[in-house]
Length: 188
Image (cartoon, rainbow, N blue to C red; front, side, top):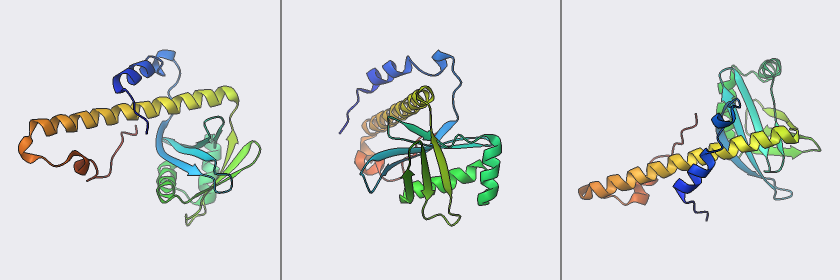
């Protein structure tokens, strides 16, 4: 089990954030999924990036990154081909498939095919391996996104613990309250 020293980790990572590098912040990471390839047991981290009118699906093994890298035209063609209305619908279908673990990956040399295996539309995506420089930027973005979420979760846990300490009459075990509702991460 990993254990983070929250404030130290947070401050170290934030000192190298996107804003400080004057780089454009990429579209927001929304759905996250760990996929274990059945033939070779290799693990892949799959995620989506969504912004108004844009959708990108990415997969990484933490060494290489593959991406749909949809241009606006390619996204429109893909939407038309699969009967999709908008980028948000892609996100919804992908998120559902991730939650059901209904994803299959076919890894080729520099490409990958990701299929949503239980999707009625038979959605499939061709992903292309990013050049090393782009992959580094993408991986860095994902790491800082995850660190931001860890920080938010730490703040939520601290707030819940403080609330427990201040209201001794309504004590419900912390672990029970933590799992009463589906955890929600701020995704934007």
